[in-house]
Image (cartoon, rainbow, N blue to C red; front, side, top):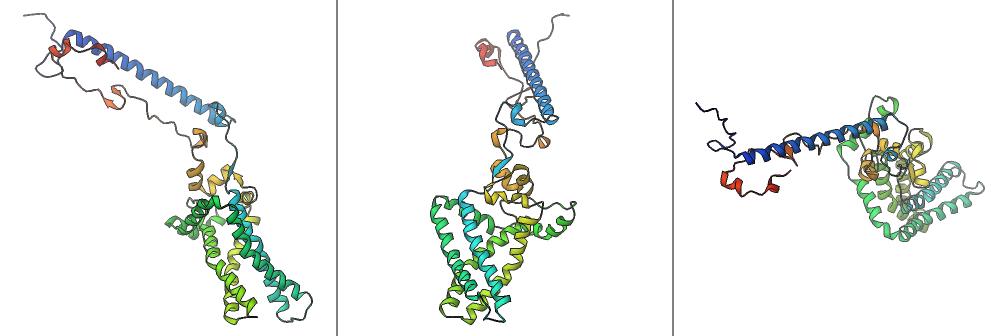
Length: 325
């Protein structure tokens, strides 16, 4: 009985030549060594991440990149100009109309009525002219305006859910509001209200002025003001009084808001525009080290190591580099 060791067979019925077997053994050793190096690099990277998490440094410092600013741009200058071009004249119109209705409606001969009446009319003209000038001045940003209109008029189930849970979330932190885009559902309602009533305010105001008090135009004018009252009060409360939301007021003054505040209140918008700044970790507490790209033993570039069918004639003519890893 022969003591010769049997050849290692990969393909049934065929023997692998010794030269090929030796090259396969070397390549397997190279593959295992490369996989081990990648794993070691992954461990070092994970240790660096843990050091970032437990330190007070900005993640950008650890990677040698510029640290992330705590302020991000929420509204461009063109958006802020248009907002105030509408808001200031509208507030003056609303205040003077309130004074005329409550104080002078019962006694028209009281002093300074004409002054309040003319202030109301002039502010109404400004409400028509100033937004046009703001849009004309920043006509290069028309895409921004159309983007905002789309954001305000496109509603999802999350917006309806946000409205339904808004009151509960205000009194208890146990209720988490759905993530929102650039505008939350309440701001969308304000936006839509302004777009639909703005031309009617201008038209009915001109009819009242030119016809010395058209009854139908006056009724529509007053009805729209009454409808806008709860929205206006709510908007002012959230912007000036509520401590959780008034933090965003600087966004309409200088354009910038706190990064973490924007991430919390406008999550979808934040990740859409600022989620990959500098390709660094935005919040180290949310960072989960990825194992993607770390090859496992027996895999090279995502392909499994499969048995190779080769004949002795093919092996003799096979170049050495064709089997290299």
